[in-house]
Image 1 (spheres, rainbow, N blue to C red):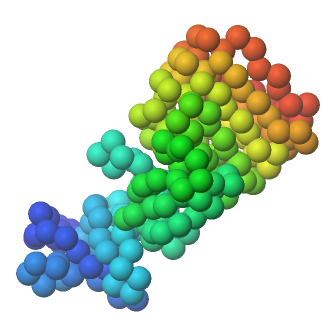
Image 2: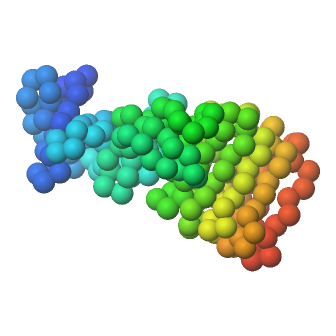
Image 3: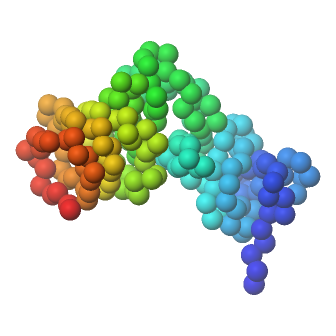
Length: 212
């Protein structure tokens, strides 16, 4: 059986969560997201917010699309409006970071559902919240396109692990700091690979596992 796919791939879609139905805004063509294995963006009908689909399922967290990081909440809705991240007021539009009104910020968003980050214009990257970073490929990290500009990383006390390849090829990185009372438990594989200027890191006492 051949899966039915959207016929108007160049058009935009509205998405009704209650019925899983995608409706083309140009021609009115309708198809269910999961049945069609839809991949791409759509606008949720109730909120008007952006959503992103892979294989017919809406996505949460962060995703790189065409070299741009997008951020989605637990319901799959793109960030829209103002959010407080790592103490900074950050504005998002259609799932993308736009600006901060409280600091000079290059990029801000989430790196797991309970972890947030802010990358400042001076190269300082702050990661805060509670829990583990999402394990991912280096090219999918939300700060990947700015990796050469990252000079310092600070982890909040609630961060419990660093994902594989988190700072892969951040060749300007010279300093890594963990907050007092750090809950850090594990450091992933190749986290600081190709960080030639980073000469030493003081690992928190609670770390029991270091991969790679």
